[in-house]
Length: 242
View (cartoon, rainbow, N blue to C red):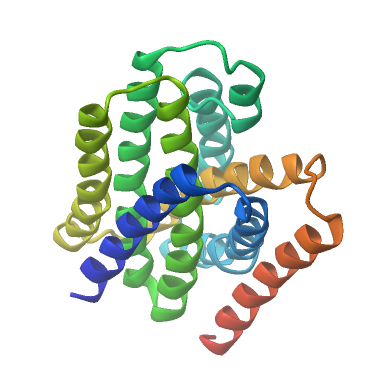
């Protein structure tokens, strides 16, 4: 039940991001900075150590999870370049309107949401502290993704009906991912492989969010401070659960 509730929270975070896109952009850079710190801390202090420990316990060659780590980073980089157009690019081309691209972006977000729901469930298969850390990071970047997607669809003049249907898909997807994690528990070796891939995806998300902050109009001290705060939060969570 806890996993389902947390995946519902992930869906609501994406909806909150979408609502914020309609109302205001004022505090988004600060939210992204904190989220990026949470994700960096999750990858460095939680996921990668679990990958190494799980590989050792299961006798799995560490090269395979690390290959998936690199693969996850590169795959999401490719997906973002072809479908998930970055916020900065959208601002540079306001005059262009491509409704099909708005739909593609939202469908990609739904797939990513399923992946996040699955990851929350998988994390709780390891232990509670890993589950909490993954959930915090997922909630943060669900909000940012919901914001970006709604903004992108608005820029490309998607109809309200299209937006409502696709938002419904985004709400259902993480819950479905959480249910799959309950139905299909993974072996220790499979967990190590999955976490390696997931860590690579998250590292790309953190990097692609942090780097644009260097060019943001928001105070560098504020964004760096919030990024460090996010890292420290995950460090404390993982130490308390050790």
